[in-house]
Amino acid sequence: MLTDHQALVDCLSSDECLRAAVYLRDSDRQDFIAGHLLLKVLAGRALCLPARHVELFQQCPSCGGPHGRPSLPRQPRLQLALAHSEGVVLAAVGWGLLGVDVERRTAPTSPQLLDRFLTVPEQRRVLGREDAQEAAVRAWTRKEALLKARGQSLEQIREVDLSHLPLGRSSGVRTFRDRALKLTFTEWTDLALDASCCVVAGTDSSSRVRDFSSGSGRTTAYRQT
Image (cartoon, rainbow, N blue to C red):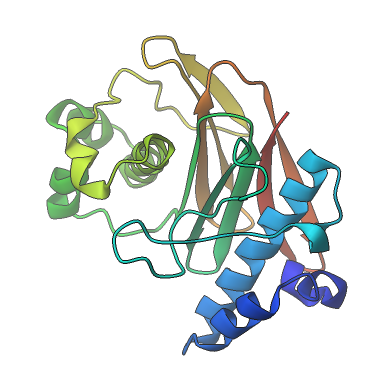
């Protein structure tokens, strides 16, 4: 993983190192480090800067704490997005509306949970499929990525209905546009990491997916261009 590269780890600021140190679980600490490094690498490429010169800023709009959606004070137009799930980290940067989500393909999808985050039409489409488990996870990642792109909370997830979007299995990276929502959905299933990934961006941007590989692990990142 990216955290195996000491040169990249050295790109973390002293504040980021202190924040990483307070995590009680090593897995959470590694997710934090990998996410911040990915954002620095991607933002650096977008801005033609070394990753060590990228300064991330996080502040919760509710409590003012040093968490929440990352941003670049010196480049406010460049949007940053970050998500993680049990050791899998997804990061994205782009010049426009942007949101991401990643979930393990085996994430819990009980009827009670489906009723909480899927609308009735969405539930019907998911439960009517042979791959209902994976379809439910794909539907979830789309909706959460969309909410993050819009700056909405998870409490509003049932207000969004995406039952009109295609829900079939994807053997690779798949991108489709929703003209009504004016959004582009890019999604893929990473079999090596056993994860479902989704990036939501405005339709006025082109995009591409980049993989960063090292050893036996792989971290996937996305960059709008």
